Image (tube, rainbow, N blue to C red; front, side, top):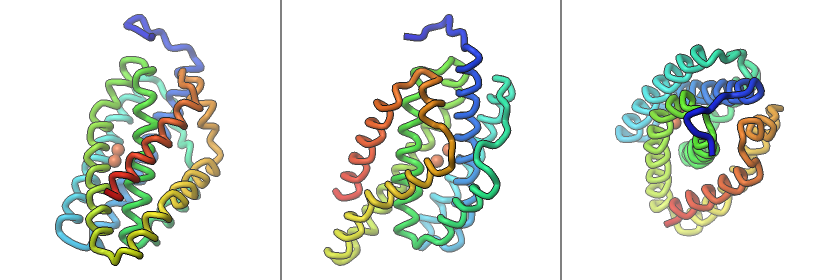
Length: 216
Ligand SMILES: [Fe+2]
Ligand SMILES: [Fe+2]
């Protein structure tokens, strides 16, 4: 158990720095993607939730940038401009329900699960920097899960069942695309003290949990 006398090694500092850069890049991308969605969202409730999220993500980016400067992180992007554009294009092309599934079940819920698993292992400053962002992510996930559940409830039974059955494959494709970015995430997580296989298990459990919530 790491305690008050936490002294980060250089390897820890570099790997945690890379994870922070990644989290911040993803938050900024989410901010841009959700901002673009506001105009085409199906109703006022969705527009307001997306707009709130844009503000939240902007705050997360600012908090993380401040912390990375203090932590002495090399803030060279870990996702290239081309990869960022590929991610934007993916979300841009999605119909509303698919957008909800990919953004909230996959990126927000599973991404947050991975970050949450790091928190107990992190140095106090990093842990503190993640406090506000992770609590806001819970709001975003709740919006996505509830909204998707409502939308699916309004569909014909067979269509709803088909959509639900296809979600695990959507998540698998996004996970493969994430690994295809070429970041050695397993190594980064191990270097900050995580058991990577246990972390993957936790993410899978979270996936099942959100799938059950959407299907409820
Ligand atoms: Fe965020
Ligand atoms: Fe979020």
